[in-house]
Image (tube, rainbow, N blue to C red):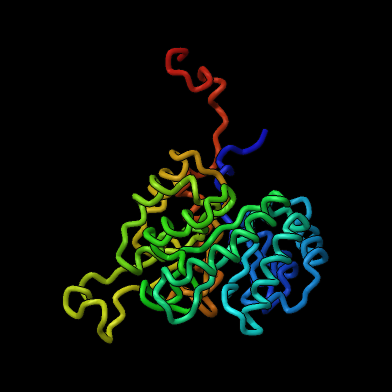
Length: 310
């Protein structure tokens, strides 16, 4: 029978711009990851995505691993040459997601650079209404990562989907059922927002989850504040940060959520460089433990879970 525990899968991200995503999947596919998110930074570099998708599926082989989501990160709202490549990358990922077995494409909304957040909304509506329809026609969802990329309400370069007030504005502009969030607690914690209540309110719009956490240095905040020279927060690999991922996964499941939590590495100040995969595999095992560990199929033997039959 299928494993109900894997209604929440634990995986990781693999770069499809700087490296060969299929080769990377083949290289680390036996470490225990249950899903992968191949992702592009700003451009696909003209790759044949249909061919890449087929090679990624071949790299997985008969292992119980899925690719639910592709990543396309950049600014598709502006019109420099690279921004236009990002926009085309979104179209190509949407059109070719099925070759990977994916049903979701995730990334940044983009932003009108240097302007207050609401000034991006007309351009946001223009671009994403069209892309939402393109995606719906292919059975694909669109998920925006909640990452500010050092922006804020007044200014920024990449993304407006970093704040729940912005989500309200965005989803009013694009009420499409297939537009939602690629959510993670880290990007809320770096702005001192409690991420857990967000799940209860926004779970219906969470299409994909990134496995990334944060450590908040409250002693630094109390002494130096958040605008001084001393870092008050670090992005962390799950298992090394402040979040209780048992609570996070429990809240997601209580809301009826299922899908993949793909670890976003390369940010931890300790488990990086030579320790990068050590940290990621620790996070993999930690997140599997947080979702309840291995599935035990004894319910039918003891009344199918109905205490009145025990």
